[in-house]
Length: 379
Image (tube, rainbow, N blue to C red):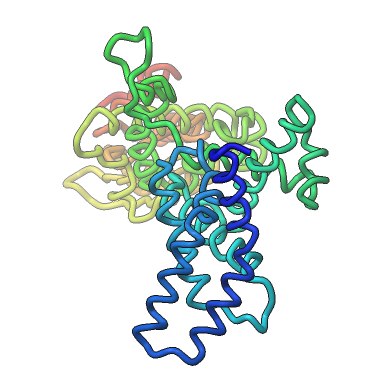
């Protein structure tokens, strides 16, 4: 046999005799002094270094330098020698467990770019090693079922370990992209969110909606969020469809104006009326005339109150005039127009002159469209 063959055989024999060497070390250390025990320990460690290197080579090709793996394996060997107890069994088996544990811990704690549970990390390493073993034995890539059977685990666990392997060395978002000039990988992820620019407008509208009266907010919600028709809204609120149309139009106009201004405009009728949906009628003497002040919306619910107030003013005004002050009225619907037209007829029968003053633009437009402006003059 050649000299080279003798060396190889001697190395193999040395690795096979680790248990005997460790047992001899334990016996000699038991009665030795501290210095002699340290020397015996160093001698056993040097004797087992090739064995630690062989275990480290099992984990090569996984992104770590071989020198680093050997250092970790040697650290595990030193721990195995220091903790070895011959009464607990084979030194070789104990050293394999200790060194492999150190190598796995190194990969788990030092090399993973993304946090992955420990059990998944360990299984990922086992799957990688088993894949290499089975590929060599089968001359092909093993299936998930074959890996699961080889490792004694379930197929879902193998799939989880394979997927988690991507977290070992994740791609950098700053990595350059080939063929894309100076572009980076992160530039290709995601897209422009067209709705992002509307976030500020949505927040502004939300705040403005809270400034509207409860009824208007409810109507807007029913129309634009509940997709209800104006007729359905009118039936539920107990008002006419035309009134619903006017209220929605006024609310949308206010929202539009408020969106275009730094400070939202006042809601017409709210601050003056004292309450949002009620109406107040007061009669006072202004020289020879009676002034009927109206505050609030004039609709089907409040028209009767206005009728009573106007009849009282016309019948008690004598030969003087009656001035209907509409400065505090933000809205007049068909019922309000009917009441005013009736007041004109009653005043003509009583020989009393009646006129309106202070009509807001929206109310003035209603009076003009309804034809009331032709028979009810402005003061």
